[in-house]
Length: 334
Image 1 (cartoon, rainbow, N blue to C red):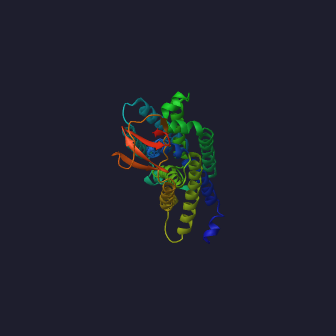
Image 2 (cartoon, one colour):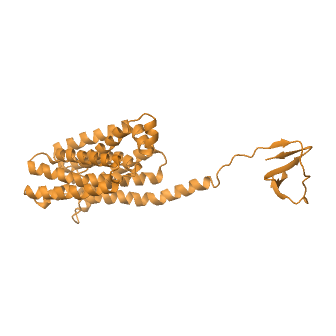
């Protein structure tokens, strides 16, 4: 069977659909996390979701839905801790990292699950998706996209300046919790595509790549979504072709494709920023205003002893902290 014939197989078609929707949803919510300087929040939520997956395996229920519930609880918890300021965000993220991962490994061991089962969620297993899994992925991704694009102005205002957003009448706390919940849902959407340990890369790297070549927020979020689809689908296709010569996991291939896009965009971004600086080499300053005065205690000239400054078609003389210039019968002062 040729590599192209592989794409006619149902399992690979399902994987392509899941990769497409994951590539759209993860960078959409990742844009707001990057704006708020919480790029590692997705990584922390991914570690918490491990406990949710293990809880689903232990109870015999769907690991996707238990991961969604536990990830949302963890995301809301970290947002509350950050808002109250009882500890800083880094410490809260560390608590999620260690507690979530340890809890997941402990519960999966109690449930008698092998490390291979948990590993498929840690590093992704997109080619094993069932039709029901694809439908759940599409529904969750659509929910994230509708919320991110529909509430983009409000979420952007809160991410940029919370004090200004609060004065403008926006419910800052509600929008912050909403972003945390959307991040948790995105993590579980990408859980089977790139894995819980790599999900943060798909949320952040496309956004960082888009920021190299874009200047407005709206352009950045749409470019990040396009790059996310390119990395997800492109990485899956590369892994499929490469599987003829070696064992290539789709999850790492997707992340490395996203990083390759960033490396290509980085010099382009440097060139665009340098070009923008050359267009405006000096800041524009307001033109000095002239104030005519009738009397002046000195008669300025080449030998008056005051500093002479050429100015357009005449010469100004610096005197008492001002620049004076004779114009006919009067002096101008500025």
